[in-house]
Length: 318
Image (cartoon, rainbow, N blue to C red):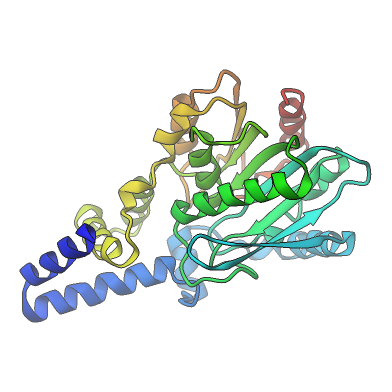
């Protein structure tokens, strides 16, 4: 309520047509960022992200087909916001109490994000549980939240896994991009279940504001005033601020083994951010892998052997 009142007073203070125009522009930017139904033209999307993933077509399709053919069970929960969320369980061929929990990235979905690396986990006897976040894949909802609501939803998924698969199961959190922000923010929570034995953090950002500032700078746009204005509008609409998304602060309280991964050529989330996350991490065991020649979320494809060797080392810590 207080945020809503402050928002209304702020817009009134802007005054008249100028306020309406400013609100309209900032609201459009906010919708483009968070609304699943707002789709940027491909050329614009490439310019903003700095990434061209068209060459991943065969790699992605072949791995997706393998995963679909492998077979899975569907699972569902209702989020605290009332949305039906979908999860997928891929069982390892041998009995195992070890589960991967996969958190996908922005404008992706579970099976797409983990189509390749899921094969690694299954080959090591790890059950694979993938989810579609709110407003993604087969899950309901209109707005993604860059990790804010995703953290709450994923904590609820962990509770579901314990009740459905066994209270003593062991869980590895593996997040990519926005999913990486989600699992790193989860890693520092006091109520993180003891079932979580390790975290894999692939190409995540330090804070939402730092990421937006970096990308707007790339586009030649003065970032600070625009970020402040959009955040003002966003907070009034969504109830949380960009300042609430700070994985680098959360990871300071992590106490589980963590593996940080990033592509050296990442044009969406700059590689220096993973170094800041790694340095801030409070875990007794932590490791860092920077993959040369890899763009955003492409480290597994670019150097699968190295990626898997680091995961093998992490599995020994569980």
